[in-house]
Length: 242
Length: 242
DNA sequence: TAGCTTTTTGTCAGAGTGACAGAAAGAGGT
DNA sequence: ACCTCTTTCTGTCACTCTGACAAAAAGCTA
Image (cartoon, rainbow over all chains, first blue to last red; front, side, top):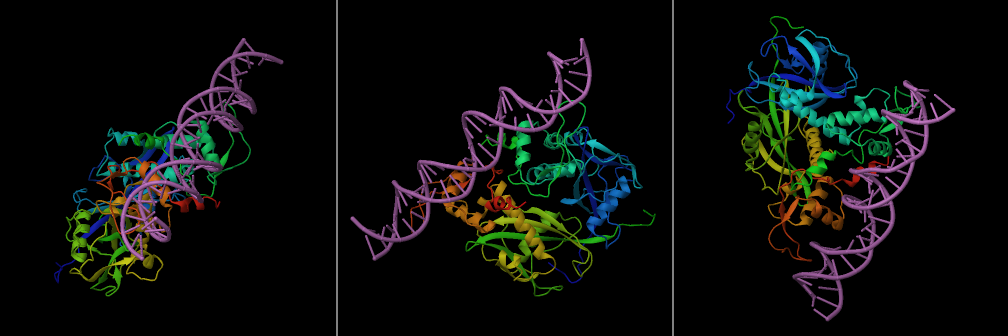
């Protein structure tokens, strides 16, 4: 199979970013309006080509994020969420894209960067339902990223990353409800997170918003892996069907 | 940042395969002895470059597997398990590798293919402990693949894929013990898998090996996602440490 | 038939969970 | 001051799941 003169075919490598946040109690994803062909004018995930042959993938991801959305993302922990390399997914040639996922507390409205005509948050359900069409195979990338976030919420303390440094249990519950897309019982949720050791720890004295009893404040604990995990009720209803 | 003449840097793309199986009650990984530079003579994961610019990633993975190990892997379901693209990980230049993971029932001893001087099974603990050194960053790739397999065993019916078409509950238990690396209580394991709906279904009449009471036979059920999941006891002991 | 091995059926106490009742702690109106 | 409304927090109850262990069942061998 290997002939003497054969050389491996070069490919172009891009990074694409799925940045999720919570705004107005809804899960939203960061999208940019493409300023260049192909798909010029369409919405797409922020991302782009490796800048030079020595650039690390994660470095490229951070760079693209600041270039295209001008977000201060020093603290964002990007996590690989998949590779998308189907031939023909990009009209410019053989382009393979590495997708990165990040979850963030309420981020500011981004401003457009150099390559993107505009950058803004969009509710993920608009993307998932197909109401909002994205360039390339980016809808699929968002789907996979959201599913990964849902799973991570079960087994890791990721949910606290959606909140600010100080939060109430109700705010934490709203994170779960928004990402999972289902309502949860506040009493049971309260009990569960309280006795999951190291998940959240009390911060300062109780005190909060306008109406109702003031809520206690908490901050994220040291624990990263939750045991026992938070379980999505949706799974248990699936369990019935054989 | 984007100057008129700038073109994205091309990279070379490889696929690497983490093929896991159970032999002699131990988790083993398929390795080849490299027949070409770099790392000629060292052990490495089967894999290689994309053959041509239009080749699909998954196609390349299957092709490399049959070329290098000559395994009949039509039925193997390969699953993406990560991307490894650190600059400098390959002396030949900027090489980015997409890792695929597969889990298989007792596979035959492989025969060497064209690019590999030899192909054989090696216990994963030899690799993880560092007793066995691998080329490139392949040890890390194996680590990640094994960890993914461990997690998949908890939430999916993957374990049945390690067994033949017909198996006993004890054989299934041995899969869990080998992959997780811990012993399990046979009685509790029996109860658990029996009442996890759709995990395993009775197959034919009971009958089996030399000594002891004959075991009932089962085959894999339709269910892919296990609910409730099988939980690793190791996690619960971690839970103590805050 | 006795002894050995392995599979299968039980038992029991404790932890975790869903469903829900109701007390506690504020704000605002009369 | 008192009542109402809202939201947070504390319990309760029945049920399921789990870990630890006992013991019966079903073969084989001596």
